[in-house]
Length: 184
Length: 200
Image (cartoon, rainbow over all chains, first blue to last red):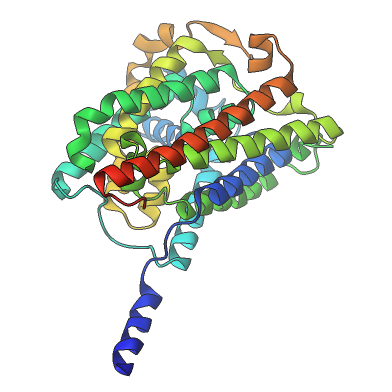
């Protein structure tokens, strides 16, 4: 009895902890967002950081091509400042660190692929790439993603932010049926 | 007076330090909520776990109330907080695409960063997809520019658009969020009972 109990105690120590209460998490996220508003006068974001990296990458390989494109130009600036000194890019580096810290504290760092039970890892990764591509394209079309437009624009009561948020849920529910095998 | 950056309490470079610290808070909160896990995020679209809705609306309500009260007390100049211009059609089309990408790939940009940083291969591959999608958008931009800049409405907020007071919109959003929370709790229990699937 006693050794068994000890063993289960040991195992429990390394088991991933359950995720936090969603309302508490949401309140914490709201405070972080509010802090960004009060300190910086701007909200959070994510896809903008990737846009900067893509624009800098294109500029490195084909500078003339990038200079003739209004989309890349917006992220490259006028050449007086380094485009990598970007607020969103530093914020996303923080997201990498913050996610890792939280995951470490809760024993949730794990080399794995998240998927439903009825789909192979390979299929899941193909879906992940395709979904990411559609999301990247859509986020640029909408001028923001879930964090930059829905969360930030939503709490600022921006019309575009709210219209976007309902469109995201609409698009998600409309497509959910067709990819249910991946998750259920 | 807030926002501090707009009143020159500190410069651009220190702003980058602030960005990193705020990012840590952002990533920490996303991971705590289970948003580094595609199964939890995708569950939102099959109604058996409504975490996305609960966390998002709680965060929006918290930040919205904070902005409203700080401005009302007079500590914050709300007109200096950046609100992106509305381009209603491209934003609805982009939103629909984002929703599809969300349920197909399992993440959004911010959550895929957390997923990758906690070791998930699918999160990392999803992030590569975002790079590729943005690259495709950039390469197609000369063709898309017309639609991208269509239906411009400027810096328009719900109180202005609906013609009702800021406080009234805040009240309506809070009421809507509370209604959505009640519906989510009720729906989760009902689905858990029906399918035997526990609420994770």
